Structure formats: C-alpha cells, structure tokens
Amino acid sequence: MSLTNSLHIARSSLYTTGQQTAVISRNITNAYVPGATRKNVTTVSLEGGGVTLSQITRTMNPALAKDVLNASAEANSQQVIADYLDRLDVTALDPELDASPAAAIQNLLDSLQTLSATPEDTILAQEVIGNAQQLALNLNNASQAVRDVRQDADADIADAVTNLNSLLGQFEELNHSIVQGTHSGADVTDAMDQRDRILQSISEEVGIRVTIGDNNDMAIYTDSGVTMFDKVAREVTFAPSASLPAGTAGNAIYIDGVAVTGEDAAMPIQSGRLYGLAEVRDDYAVTYQNQLDEIARGLIEAFAESDQSVTPALPDVTGLFSYSGEPAVPPSGTIYPGLASEIQVNPNVDPLQGGDVTLLRDGGIGDPGNPAYVYNTTGASGFSDRLSELIDNLNEDRPLDQAAELGTSGSLRDIASSSVAWLQGERATATEAYEFNAVLYERSYEALSSATGINIDEEMTKLLELERAYQASAALIQTIDEMFASLLQAT
Image (cartoon, rainbow, N blue to C red; front, side):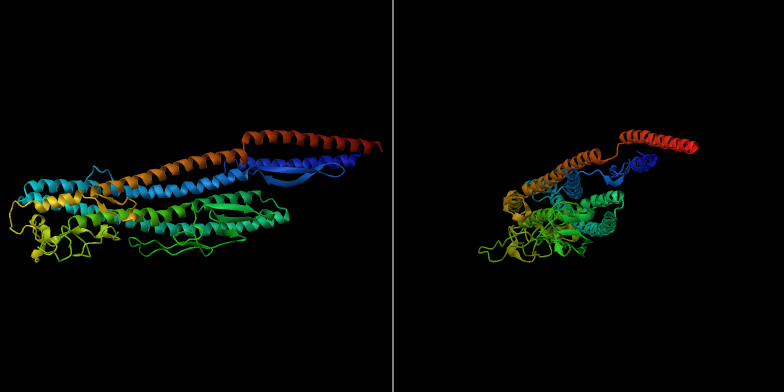
C-alpha cells in the first residue's frame, strides 16, 4: 500500500470520525428535549480503502409510537368527560344535603306529612311552600348548570378545532421539508422529531393513525378512517352553536367535509378531546337534563288537580307546581325538554306573591275561580284528605321516558336518587378510564423513550471511543508525514 493511499485512508477516517462526533454531540445536547430521538451515523467502506459517512438515521419504534398516540387520545377524551361531569356532580351533591334535589324532595315530603297531622296550621303550610320553592330552585339551578356545561363544551370544541387546524398547517410545512430533504439526501432527522411532536399534539385533540410512504412522507387519518392529512392538510370545520336548547344536539364537527360527530356521522371519531367534548355536550349533559326534566314533570303530575265534580269532565290542571305551559299538565311518561328550568311554585298559593296558602289543603290552586277543582268543599279547617293524597302521589311509581336512562318507572325519590347514582357512576367510570389511560400513556412514553431516546452515559462512552479513533487516525497521518519527510530528505 502506497503512502498516498494510506494518507487517503487516514484522512477519510479522520473526517468520518469528526462527523460521528458532531452527531453524538448533538445527541447529548438534545438529551433533555422531549421527544428527541437518538441519531445514528451509518458509514460505508470506500473502494481502495477508507470510510465515509453514508447517512444519519434516527432510532424508531413504530409499535411503541402507536401506543403512545392511542393512549394520549384516550386519556384526553376521558379527562374532558371526567372534568365536565365533576361540574355536573356539584348540582347533585350529597343526597343528605338540602341543595340536592333528592334531599329537597324528602324535605317536601316530610313537611307535607307534618302538615297533614294539623292541616289548619298555616305556619306549617308556609313551610311546605318554602320547601317546594327550594326544590324548584334546585331544579332551575341544575338545569342552568347543564346549559352552561353544554355551552362551554361547544366553545371548547371551537377552540380545539382552531388549534387542530393550526397543528395540521404546521405539520404540512414540516412534512414538505422532510420529503424534499429526504429526496435530496439531507439530514432530516431533527425535522422528523419536530413532526412527531406535532403529531403528539394532534393526537390529544383527536384519535389518529398514521402511515409512512416514500421519502418519509406521512399521512394522517382519524381513528375512524377519515383523512386528515395526505400531501396537504384537510380542513376541520365547526360552526359554534348560538344556543343549545334542551333536548337538541349541537352542530357536528367536519373533517374534509365528512361529519365525525353527531348522530348522522358516518365515520365518528372515538377518542381525543373533540370526542370527549362532543360526548359531554350531546350525550352526558343531555341525558342528565332529561333526568331533571323527568323529576320536574313528576312533581307537576303529583301535585296536579283534577275535576272533583260528581261527573268529572274537565282536564287535570297544574297545582302547587306550574310552568310555562300551564294550566295543562305535561303528557305522562314523555320528556318535556327544559321543564326543569321552568318549574316554579304557583303564585296562587304563595303568600309572598299574594297567594292563599290554604289552597294547598283545600285545592283550587290552578284555577281559584273554578269550584270544580276544590277538594275541601265544606271549608273544614281540619280537612286532610288532599294532603294525604299528595303524600301518596309523591310515593307513587310513575312511568318514565327511556331517554332519561333511569328505567321504566319509579317514585320521585327513587328517580332523584337514581339520577345521582347515574351521574356519579358515569363520573367514576370516566375518572377510572382517564387514570388508566394516563398511566398507560406514561408507561408507553417511558418505553418509547427508553427504546429511542438518548442516554447520556452511552453517548459519552461512544464519544470516548471516537476520540481514540480520532487520535489513532491523527497518529497515522503524523507517521505518514514523517515518512514523507524522510523520503524527501533521502532523495
């Protein structure tokens, strides 16, 4: 082997070692950057001897990366649901507390039973009216909380859609530069790390799956198969709802013109914040509103007044509790959307509003001028039949609309207690699912970091090995230089 060839080999080794050292130094610099992967240098032997840099690659584990994206989407969807159900749970509270509808119903029943023993006591009658007003207020407040939750979820959907479109735009720019860089042979590994970080953020908003094509080109699809990115970003659209009346669903989210939420969605998404927000707005909150409306309807039914004529011919009318559709009583067994927000104590029986509290005992609340609805026709102060009937009505099972998800029938106390149990059960389920997926995400991320991340100790060990290789190449060049010097001196 000639001295010139030996010098060429030593110089190529020196250059390649320098390149490897630069990559390892970059690894060490990025060791604490979230999502940074370990970069590796691939070398090839040259014809005639020597080595050169072939390419810089990054360590990858597609299976673990997929697990991280899936766990991220699931954790975020369940966290959203759990957080919003926490807000609704405040309206139910502990059944032992007066602010709970279940407790308020029990208070109303207790005060009625006390009044039935001494029906002439107007102080006790006023206590019944006060408990009825508290119950109506609880239902009003709970219904308002549901409306607030739905409206806030709708606003959060709009914000999430804006963020998602921004992320897809950033992804498009990076993906384009990666494809061009790969085609030209440039080092695109850092750009690919940045693209993965954006992909992670996208998965928080909506569940996704990805494919990688030629020149590291990546395509993104929702977990239901709708294209979000393929060469170019697809637009995510959503029209915020100006209002969300009880019983109505909000506007759907569209990706590339395809509905991904709502009853009419052909390819509905299954995870991510957008999924959780849509579920809260159009499922959980709507169901809870239905339950509140069923409680309100049951109260109006229980205190409704019927025609007391020998031959009844008139329809039932509202009694202690009224609403915007009075004097008609809402149809039995059918949800009246938004009734919980309308229910109130009839002013005709409320002394504070100029009403007569004795109508609670005697009847005629709904239409004081019509004797057909008067139960105490003799005006006896000790008349308790109507009060006993009201107590029985409160304890009576009544049919329920299946949309309330509380069974087919139940007493008002049972309905209120079942509603609390349903809400707390759904909240517990969402919380457990979030905690499970949060741990799964953490474990998957740790496994991915262990497999593809940067270990400073390993990088420092490699750096020491390269330093020795560099020194050996430098020593070889020095030896060759001395040999050339001797040769020239000899000639």
